[in-house]
Image (cartoon, rainbow, N blue to C red; front, side):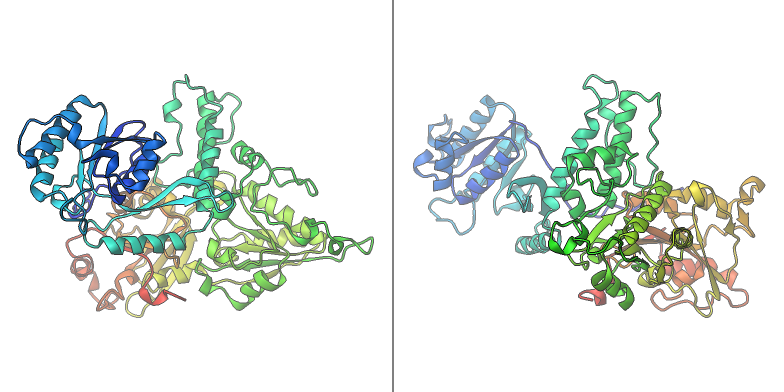
Length: 616
């Protein structure tokens, strides 16, 4: 039976609310009340401010908003109260107001803020009575600086803008420390915001337009309209997008188009999303378009595009001879992702030699950011289900550009010769008259496990390693190697097919075991799933073959690209290490070894890079 993580209290259920004309009641009329009112207005709510003394005591911003009809300011003293006690009167007056009001979503008490004029600050007794009124009516309440009375708290929030238009976007980031450091939450929020691309808000807006365009073919009366989404419940974005069928319904067409929305949201760089045109959106959703015809600036493109010298109208672009000198093609590996792992040759190719960069989709923004702004960059739309078509488009584009005399950098993640189709491209370019220069890159086969603290070989634990892919050409199954205790197995491109791989490795059924060349793997064998190796959001999940599927399900959304490492070397460097795996009789101690490694848990999850990599 699967074992799932135990809940650890102290967190909040972080939600976002679209209030849609529901009422937010704010008690108090200070600057904080004005700030809360603005937040509520931006969430499309109706705002009522209850202020002792009404508009006469309200801050300047609230008076301005009241004059412009954005908020309603009500004098607390004008509300009916049933008690002579000042402490009870406000609570009774609020209770009467809430009884008559409709669709009150929240009550926010702001006149309790620390540092305010003590003569105008609400007392703890009065605040408690107000909170009790709200709770009795099942209306969530927030009381400033009195966390014990709060049903909810406010995150430190930033709303992004479009850097070109200055318009506010729908993207917001909120940070909460759950009362453990409100000032620190603001700092963390600022750090997050500064590390995100400046055009991330524009990217969200463009994806919103893309979503609307994808759904446009489905009528609001279609029976499956509610089903049309981006597969948000599906943890992997690598599910192939089905080809258009001649008999597909309107709903099926819209679902297929929404799958493309999910694909570009996951794989395209933020800067690429932010610059999508209407024509490019249509081409993305069509799923069948190719590269634009050369010389047609209006043709749709599936690639990131910055104009190169050959496309800029200037004297320097004029041809001075009837023929163009031949260009060259560099087939370059970008390493696992971290820009510090680029070789000198790769960095020079990108920054000094390239006229055109044709990049695979998984090359991260941090590497692409090194490319000078005058160099044309195109990002491949090589998604599951259309990889072969996108591969051909890139090779055709490289040959066309080289024939124009340009230096083309064909940029691949990792090392181009390790499941990077380098061989296919070398043969293609050679057949078209170009002998490409292949520049190796640091392969994720070695770098990925190293970043996870796992050696692929280790004396006493692993004498050799074997690398294979989890999926063959055109999605066909591959034959996996059999189990050897002294060997580490590294699987690339297999996470999306994890259940089938686990079955192939462990099954004794002859029909299934035929997909494996050798002995079956023991269910207690260690396995590591490494996602986005070397990147700041790297995640490593370690478990056993028996429990890794449940571990992956527990984390929800996957983070491609991912790789699998299987074997005893995984625990060889954990804490005090274990290099006794290959000693005689070591198999009898495997269960004890696993307990020392995982304790009473079934898996362990590690987020991010080691601290030593910061700033490199």
